[in-house]
Image (cartoon, rainbow, N blue to C red; front, side):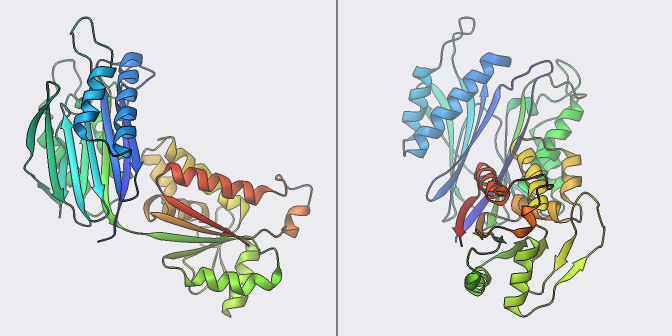
Length: 390
């Protein structure tokens, strides 16, 4: 089947708390994607520690092939006990989706996952098991392209303007809200933000509990190839461009010199586009057969700012407004966030003569530095990255 998964989440801290008592951990194994949502008991520092410990223990053990029994047993023995309630745990949900379409979900005291296929909420049978005195729900099922899965902490179901009243906001309300958001297929990040923002509004922007929404969206493998910087040896121009064009997936050329090399080797014209001109972002260009042609270091730097905001979870409606703008930086960032599971970078190591002007606000190693930052941030986003230098 060769599927991939788009994963995103958004958390709201309990009002007046600096730390969130929910924690999301995302892992990639050789054959699967795993999302863990842990909700620490209480709020603030203690809850944050409980949730972090739980998600890290579960993630490390599952990544190394441990069974759910041994994971739960380890958590039961590791977490400190609350002297008042005489329990010590964080509730959790674990969803693992394999490349072959098999899926495995484990829930312990978190609200049930919302399964959505073809704009309808689905239900799957589960097996109930008792492990170390804890009632665990286990699901095993197959996924299809386009499926969405929404995991949540219990703060979602408490959403409302008072301590005891939420005006009827229930699991079914949350499921209906998710369906409304999916009038057309959207990215996991847009769905997670939309649902979290709905909860925030219900709370009157003063959340009474830590609230987290995590979304997994089953998508096909999507590759983005980026060629930036001229090769060290001019004789390699043709070889690099032909290798770049041969790749499966979308093609992005970043940099004026790189664009000129690409057009020359392909025998195509370059057309500069001044549509929706933005003085802060250099204009894009058009080359037949290339999906996106941008200026180099300035555009890459601006795209990286958006990618770093995404990684830091500084995402809201205004973030997506910026992402949807018609300029090179926004288009590149959007492609890497929402239309990409793998990034292949083709990086030339020649010194760009344009960078020798000492009045420019960057040094000679700027391109390599940007490539390193792009690799780091893309991996934090869960994308696989390969780099070839020329």
